Length: 138
Image: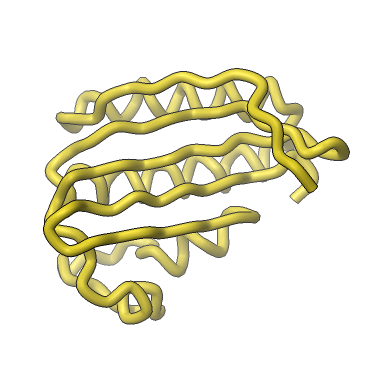
Protein backbone atom coordinates (compact mmCIF):
# COMPACT_ATOMS: atom_id res chain seq x y z
CA UNK A 1 0.00 0.00 0.00
CA UNK A 2 1.27 3.46 -0.89
CA UNK A 3 1.97 5.89 1.92
CA UNK A 4 0.99 9.50 1.31
CA UNK A 5 2.59 12.44 3.14
CA UNK A 6 -0.07 14.94 4.22
CA UNK A 7 2.16 17.49 5.96
CA UNK A 8 5.84 17.74 6.74
CA UNK A 9 8.33 19.88 8.63
CA UNK A 10 12.06 19.78 9.26
CA UNK A 11 14.08 21.03 12.23
CA UNK A 12 17.74 21.07 13.21
CA UNK A 13 18.91 19.26 16.35
CA UNK A 14 22.19 20.70 17.58
CA UNK A 15 21.80 20.96 21.36
CA UNK A 16 19.91 19.33 24.22
CA UNK A 17 17.47 22.30 24.30
CA UNK A 18 16.17 21.25 20.85
CA UNK A 19 14.79 17.97 22.23
CA UNK A 20 11.71 19.12 24.17
CA UNK A 21 10.25 21.33 21.41
CA UNK A 22 10.70 18.49 18.91
CA UNK A 23 9.08 15.96 21.25
CA UNK A 24 6.15 18.37 21.61
CA UNK A 25 5.82 18.72 17.82
CA UNK A 26 5.83 14.92 17.41
CA UNK A 27 3.11 14.67 20.08
CA UNK A 28 1.02 17.26 18.20
CA UNK A 29 1.33 15.17 15.03
CA UNK A 30 0.25 12.07 17.00
CA UNK A 31 -2.79 13.88 18.39
CA UNK A 32 -3.74 15.09 14.88
CA UNK A 33 -3.44 11.50 13.61
CA UNK A 34 -5.94 10.44 16.28
CA UNK A 35 -3.52 8.21 18.21
CA UNK A 36 -4.41 6.86 21.62
CA UNK A 37 -2.40 8.11 24.60
CA UNK A 38 -0.57 4.75 24.63
CA UNK A 39 0.51 5.05 20.99
CA UNK A 40 1.45 8.71 21.47
CA UNK A 41 3.63 7.67 24.42
CA UNK A 42 5.33 4.93 22.38
CA UNK A 43 6.01 7.39 19.56
CA UNK A 44 7.34 10.08 21.91
CA UNK A 45 9.53 7.57 23.78
CA UNK A 46 11.02 6.27 20.51
CA UNK A 47 11.56 9.87 19.35
CA UNK A 48 13.31 10.79 22.62
CA UNK A 49 15.69 7.82 22.38
CA UNK A 50 16.58 8.58 18.76
CA UNK A 51 17.06 12.28 19.50
CA UNK A 52 19.49 11.37 22.28
CA UNK A 53 21.37 9.10 19.87
CA UNK A 54 21.43 11.84 17.25
CA UNK A 55 23.09 14.24 19.71
CA UNK A 56 25.34 11.75 21.52
CA UNK A 57 26.65 9.65 18.62
CA UNK A 58 25.92 11.77 15.56
CA UNK A 59 26.92 15.17 16.89
CA UNK A 60 23.48 16.56 16.04
CA UNK A 61 21.64 16.62 12.76
CA UNK A 62 18.13 17.19 11.56
CA UNK A 63 14.70 15.68 12.02
CA UNK A 64 11.83 15.46 9.55
CA UNK A 65 8.32 14.98 10.98
CA UNK A 66 5.55 13.88 8.61
CA UNK A 67 1.84 13.25 8.89
CA UNK A 68 1.21 10.17 6.72
CA UNK A 69 -1.68 7.97 5.62
CA UNK A 70 -1.88 4.69 3.76
CA UNK A 71 -5.54 4.65 2.78
CA UNK A 72 -6.77 2.83 5.87
CA UNK A 73 -4.78 4.40 8.69
CA UNK A 74 -3.14 7.68 9.70
CA UNK A 75 0.24 7.94 11.34
CA UNK A 76 3.42 9.86 12.00
CA UNK A 77 6.77 9.28 10.33
CA UNK A 78 9.90 10.75 11.90
CA UNK A 79 13.30 10.68 10.19
CA UNK A 80 16.52 11.34 12.11
CA UNK A 81 19.54 12.28 9.97
CA UNK A 82 23.08 12.84 11.20
CA UNK A 83 26.49 13.26 9.60
CA UNK A 84 28.34 11.47 12.39
CA UNK A 85 30.78 8.58 12.14
CA UNK A 86 28.11 6.04 11.18
CA UNK A 87 27.47 2.60 12.65
CA UNK A 88 30.07 -0.04 11.81
CA UNK A 89 27.82 -3.05 12.39
CA UNK A 90 24.07 -2.39 12.24
CA UNK A 91 23.17 -6.01 13.03
CA UNK A 92 25.23 -5.82 16.24
CA UNK A 93 23.72 -2.42 17.14
CA UNK A 94 20.24 -3.96 16.75
CA UNK A 95 20.91 -6.65 19.39
CA UNK A 96 19.32 -6.26 22.81
CA UNK A 97 21.81 -5.14 25.43
CA UNK A 98 24.31 -3.71 22.96
CA UNK A 99 25.63 -0.23 23.78
CA UNK A 100 28.72 1.69 22.85
CA UNK A 101 27.83 4.41 25.32
CA UNK A 102 27.41 2.37 28.53
CA UNK A 103 23.86 3.67 28.71
CA UNK A 104 20.75 2.04 30.09
CA UNK A 105 18.59 3.50 27.34
CA UNK A 106 16.22 1.51 25.16
CA UNK A 107 18.77 1.23 22.43
CA UNK A 108 17.84 0.71 18.81
CA UNK A 109 16.08 -2.67 19.33
CA UNK A 110 13.91 -1.27 22.13
CA UNK A 111 13.05 1.71 19.98
CA UNK A 112 12.13 -0.58 17.08
CA UNK A 113 9.66 -2.47 19.30
CA UNK A 114 7.79 0.77 20.09
CA UNK A 115 6.94 1.60 16.48
CA UNK A 116 5.30 -0.14 13.52
CA UNK A 117 8.03 0.56 10.97
CA UNK A 118 11.74 1.06 11.60
CA UNK A 119 14.43 1.58 8.99
CA UNK A 120 18.11 2.30 9.55
CA UNK A 121 20.79 3.15 7.03
CA UNK A 122 24.36 3.96 7.97
CA UNK A 123 27.63 4.50 6.17
CA UNK A 124 30.93 4.75 8.00
CA UNK A 125 32.16 8.32 7.84
CA UNK A 126 28.88 9.59 6.35
CA UNK A 127 26.36 9.29 9.15
CA UNK A 128 23.16 7.47 9.95
CA UNK A 129 19.52 7.88 8.99
CA UNK A 130 16.77 6.27 11.06
CA UNK A 131 13.14 6.45 9.96
CA UNK A 132 10.27 5.37 12.21
CA UNK A 133 6.55 5.25 11.57
CA UNK A 134 3.83 4.82 14.17
CA UNK A 135 0.32 4.16 12.89
CA UNK A 136 -2.81 5.29 14.73
CA UNK A 137 -4.11 1.72 14.93
CA UNK A 138 -0.75 0.03 15.38
